[in-house]
Structures are given as C-alpha cells and as structure tokens.
Length: 303
Image (cartoon, rainbow, N blue to C red):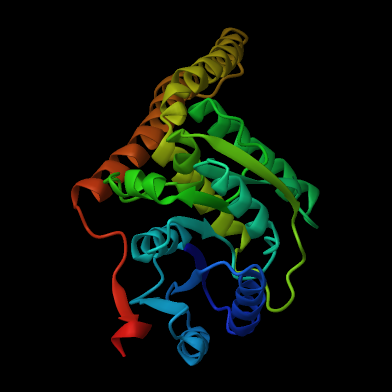
C-alpha cells in the first residue's frame, strides 16, 4: 500500500479536487492506497471538507493550531501505514501523475525517489535569486546538490522509520530526507500552476522559513562571523584613517575620533557576531524545552 501525505493550510477549494485526482489516478492503476490530509490549523473550511470525504481510504488529521508545513509532514508520516509514503502539496502544483513513476522506481528497489524540478513555474527574478541562494547554502551544508529539490518525494517506510528517530523539533524534511542516504532515484517534473486559491506563503514567511531551515541544518552562519568581522575591520580601519586625518587638519569635532573608533571596532564586529550566535542560542533553547513538534486536535477516525 502507498500512503500519500497531503499537508493543507486554508485549502478548502482544493481538498475535494486533490482527493479525487489522486484517488482516481491510483485506482486506475489498481494500487492500494490511503490519502492522509493534515490540516495545519486552517481558519477556513478545510477541516470540514476533509471530514466530508473521510473514509477507509481518506484520513484526516487536524492540528490544534498552525505549526507549519514541516510539522504537518512529520505528523502525516507518523500516521502513515503504507509500505512507502509520498509527500505532495495540496494545491496540485506537484503533478500527481508523477506518483506513478515514483511508485515504479520504488518497486525496482529505490528507497528514496526525489521529485526534481525542471522549472519553478512563474516567479519573479527576485524570488528566483533568493531561492537559488538558499539552495546553494543547503547544498553546501549537506554535500548534496539540492538546487532543484522539493518536498515532493517518495520514501520507503524504513526510511520514514529512520527519520522518526530524529529528535530535533525544528527538522528540515527536504534536506534530511536526502541526507539520510539510501538508494535514491529521481523523477523530473514541471511545476504546475495553482488551480484554485492563492499561495499561503508571503515573502516574509518565506524569509523566516529559509532562515529557520538554514540554521537548523548548518552552522555556516556562525562560521562566517569571522568573515563579517574581517569586512567590518577593513571598514573600521578606513573610517579611523579618515577620522585621524580630520583630527590632524583640525576639522574634527571634539570626541569624534574616539566615537568612530569605538563604534566601528566594538559595535560593528561584536554586535553582528553576537546577533548570529544569539539566534543559535535561541534555537538551542527551543530544543531543550522539549515541547512536541505539533499537537493533534482531532482525527477523522476518532469521530
């Protein structure tokens, strides 16, 4: 049996369509399946739509509040009973027909089947540039080329079991599922346009998501503190030279030289460094509190 994990946040317009498309696709190929919708604390009728189609092959999980996509994926994988699990977006921008190709590769012995994006669909140049920078950082941290990676992938159940042993609360599914290794296959696809509704990812939400995932998976930002300090030191020396020159020619204000030197050398270098390290300390604090990744408010099979 194949389990299809579908995180959903304010997707009332897509629930029925997504269930119908994926369900018919798998039934036509006579593949036993279950669909697991994870309502990530939606504030529209997403949960009601899930409940309306719940049954033997469609299950639903509802969070007590919004915990984020990573938590929704974790909850779906934990609930899945299939021999392999597929994670796919509810908006159908990940082409459902590619599930069949992934399934065939899995039957051939591949334990992880990655969905590799050929194109990202319509997006601005700024968004594309930011995405490229993000994936380059993650690729550098993992040692794996993730420039075209996505959450759309199939995992053998034993891979899911391995991921379940990871205790970190702020896990990054896209990177971890590649980092664990195993025999990996690839399926290429073009990102489809959303059929209904709008993207729930604002620019600020994407920035926070990127920062959170980079810091949860790599210490690279801490390692560049020295580099930043070197840059600020060069600037400080330059400004200090200007300040001393103004002092010598008699055009400096009283105390100006001292202020410039102290601000540049102490303020610039130390505060930037402390800011980066402070963010990591905050991440450690969140981990040691040992709070759950998510809280399940309801399940369709509990009703």
